[in-house]
Length: 212
Image 1 (cartoon, rainbow, N blue to C red):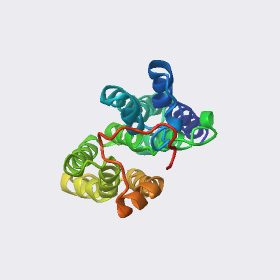
Image 2: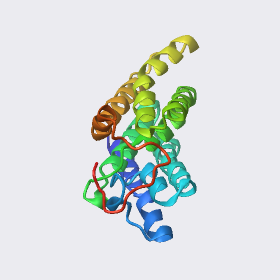
Image 3: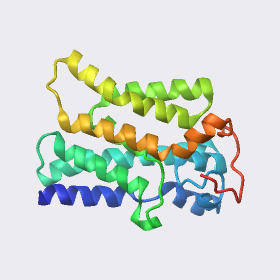
Image 4: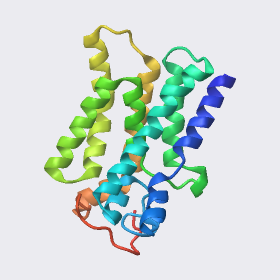
């Protein structure tokens, strides 16, 4: 239990690092908490500074989820999938409720993607492909995120079944946590989607508008 606790804490502290906010301040002189959606994720950074910076932040957030899962279980001598799942949960929670920013963070999608790629690459890549397709057709990043993560649990279960792999309860539980957590973190986006006021990809962020 002590090793699992250590893995969780380290993963949380890594996940809590607000790279999009840091990039915005250092390279753009902007505080993305005060513009656009007010969210500290890569999508809001892309609206504020352009796609190049948004993609960079997205990849870093993916790495925040993947690296703890790939490194810590082996380093701490944790066997089985539980150690990786604990690291994944820690990193995702860190991104969503970071101690460094008074527990007001991002939505956790990119970090969750990184964690799932490290744990079970094929289902994660399938879901990411679904995300890209939805965003390409609708230009709503939020809708792509909600759709892809909601499909993660059944896709993982089906993949495991077709591959003849044993049921992995820790990872199944993680997929459910991710799906539910992403929907909850996108409550305001869902409201805007329903009201027709959600921003589409490519629309510039407005300074001084921190509506979530």
